[in-house]
Image 1 (tube, one colour):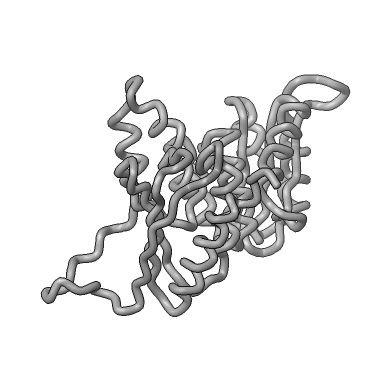
Image 2: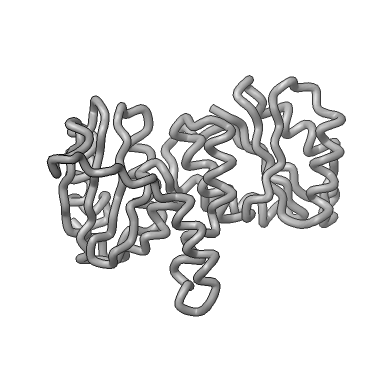
Length: 257
């Protein structure tokens, strides 16, 4: 797995953000190191501490660094001069909280540095989509377009262009809809499965979005009783769809017993 470094002026802020993200993954999260504060309770950042954190989580697959404020960027840039690892180290401009959650979930699923960084950078898409009716609709549309896979051209005889395609529609029973935790469970369930799966909120007319994208799934804003359409292609398409149908029917473990 790639490593993740969290650089913040406040140790409490950094720890809280990491703790929130860890709520979305299992007991074996990706390597995460916090480099926060300037020592002795002083608010600030320390380039030497950031370099040490980078070296701590480097494993040969790359390191993604999150930063909260401007001087954290400066410290992180300086840290790349002090670190000893030869891993690729990338400083991301992703939003601190949303991006960190997206990154930890996708890294936990075994995604590459490029994939995790791209997902983290798109992390504002879900919030922009939900608030589109209050302005910023253009940005929301752009974020959704970035997440949606290209539509396959229909075959000339009107049948599916891909004979492996499996599609099913199921109602969403979660009282709070398809929020962050169910979305993270979907991403983890599809990790390593030989299938490409998309999700569409049929009721709201949103999607399709990739089932491997936490932010894409959350951007649907699917509410209780909305009908979700799962469409999968690939060697394990049926397995992928069956897994999500079962998870959806169980309310992703959130239904009261």
